[in-house]
Image (cartoon, rainbow, N blue to C red):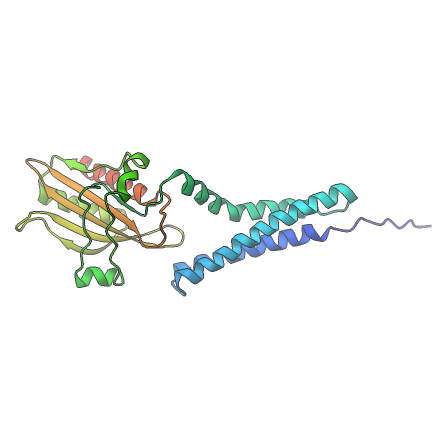
Length: 258
């Protein structure tokens, strides 16, 4: 007589854990595509991303519930539960990193190498068109007081090069970094300062951030001040400071190539 071997059923919590984890990944990809392609506004795209995070959290919780059921009853589905946890954590990794940054860094979205007299953004028709009419608000000295403690490496760039050549190096550095030039004014005239307005985008979501670079002649030297502002959100999670530091590194590369 053939003996019938009955297998323990798979716990439903494990099945739904992986399903929700896969769903959260799909939602993440949809959110990124919506924002990157500008198929919808940022608020709608981030709402989709929020649902992805919620789905990932539920997937991890269901995986925990599945593990408890498997331990207690001996049912199958541990592989599904583990995959649900791993896929869920894959989605939650980036928000968790942002949460750490939000606690360890001050709530700033406007960083400048000159906190006493930060460069001002141009209001020309060309600059406004590049920024879709947006003009970053001016930030008071009190609000910038936390910047030096959080980002001590953000400092003015002083070069032993005349202002005209420095201005050209700044343009080359901006091009090397992939910045979109919104407006530019060569040094000279009554004050002598040069200025370059630009737009840069974040790597994943392609959020636009606004940048202005001021080139000011000194006695035998040139001073470069950079201001970088996030267009969305009150916290930049250190993005603007890193952008300024990358610009400083590119300027050093331009100097080394002379």
